[in-house]
Image (cartoon, rainbow, N blue to C red):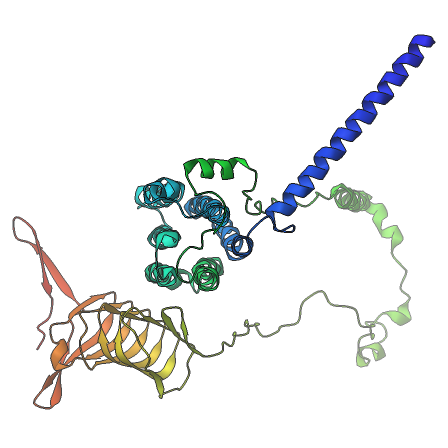
Length: 478
């Protein structure tokens, strides 16, 4: 008994010791969390602001990327790592003074390595179905280099955002009517750079704000930051979807059906005895012996519920009504869902801006000044007048389109379009017109103060000349 008592005392002391250790570790973890999140002033305000960006727009981009899976999801995880590397650099800058010039490349190396990894992934996956997604990220991720740009890092991020827009427009064109997940992905990705520009404008207007106190930053300083436990992670991925619904027991209906069939066969097997269950009909109830019954109508039966569905007109899904849009979103002019509007005008244009025109009907748009590119998508009976385009004008999946060039444009592309009239100016006669899967295309050339119409060939003939295929119009165009 004495030995048992001694063992119990030792066990109680061990339990008290473990509880004390757990309490101390839990308390230190709370203190560390507060320091990381700036509750006790351990983190600079601009690091806290960057954390809000990570937990907001960057986290939303990661969620949307995970829904698309595949290469997009993998690429997004690389973006996540790059932003975490930038967060570590900002934490360094908030605690240390600006380093010597020869130290800067080594301090920036973690971020530059992440950027290079993201760009290499795009190059290794040129055959990916999501190549436009990968390109949008790859072309704009150098925006994280704003920390080395001065005196105005904000415009640098804006320029990278414009580079992404070229590819995100392609994503929208491919998926806008088929898969809204890609539209959400584009919005969340571009929103990252918009919020980063706002963040820079508020906290680093003329360049990265280094601490005015503390030691001078060095590679050893970065190692100290990385091992101090102050580097936070973005939220984990969402939990997996719930499992399949429970299976219901279907044996009871099966047993009931089997019993019903058995009863039916038992009645049929009665043979001659089956007539014993029939009710006797007297002579006064027989119509051939009582003709007066023929004059009367059939017996009235109480209405029963019919199992045959009544014929109804087929239901058509209600058409969604969209509000018309004419607005500048970043560097992209959005002109969407315009109906019977012939006075649409865009005047404040810049060289880096693009215009995306979607599902406009019986409307006319004039774009003044010089713009980068114009896309007309899913429009009907739409007129476009513009001054100058430095890139390309693209018409796709449209019908009855009229385009008038007032200045210059190098290329006009027509794809999957029925009916397209292009009025060229004297300055744009060297324009190249590329067409595919389209019909009823006409080019109008200015001559003697008027326009002369030239149809674009729609049929072609191809022949082998002994060394190569030769293709030419199958009809004489005059």
